[in-house]
Length: 400
Image (cartoon, rainbow, N blue to C red):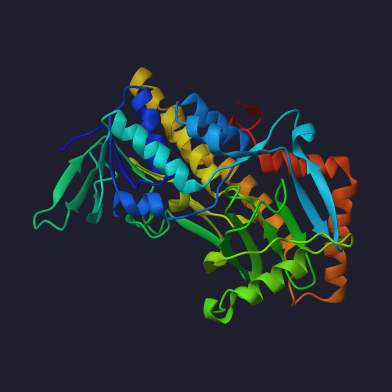
């Protein structure tokens, strides 16, 4: 089996990269350990930056997103029981965000790749990489638990297989630097059958902890509260969840959060992680293989999309003109945006969550930070620019 680019992982990064390469006339094959049904039914939230929306539209896979996604021109920041609207559309001269779940993006990309006769091998196992430091890297894998492994020969390997996949582990330890931070917070997330609570997302800082009010569909909403990451979801009855949510988002003017049946609930820990570099020989990693951000900044899916946008151009330049300059600088270019997203996600997380180990002085500083943010146009502009998405920079001072 031969292809130009072997892609491990049929998440947003792998699927979008395969589609973008196809548009440039470059062949690829995707290997995915899960079934098609599993990747399309794993429910995940999704806030799409302006650049991600533009990419999906320009690549011809944005029609359903434009019909069914919820466009937001701003968000609301709440503290001391008062809400402050951040008009991102005005502050960024027209940028906006779109609420469209990640698994819906995956459905659209899978459908497009299959429509274009793209090759996706689902439910594969025993994936391993070989010869990544040569001009002929290979991927070994088994299809549907068959006895004999297959071997895929390719020019390049794109590791889009997530944090636990084999791609990053193939990079030598003396080359790979893994930088991480574990937060003392977890998010208890729910899906609830209720009307839309608010036209825009609400980020609430409360003495009891952080809360986020979000939107999924007109009938189904996704909300979150800060909890101990080691807590057991069994300790959280529906009544306890609604009581805590309502307490954290109540306002001095008496606003009430609508409740209803909870159809799904879980607790996830929060961490930041970046691998440097993001390439080794003919192996390039992207998305969660290379970095993880806390969800507060809504950057995970968007970083995956910007990674493969960079990688697509690097590979396209190589095949179309023989130019290796961008290919050799993939890590440098991608990591510039990754670290800015890490900074913003860390800032959102530490500013909005209640750290109960902080002193009263540190709590006072946190509230003062929010007061400054909501009273300064310069600070609000910085928030809006980061939230709606910073540009890709191919050179240190040249945004594109």
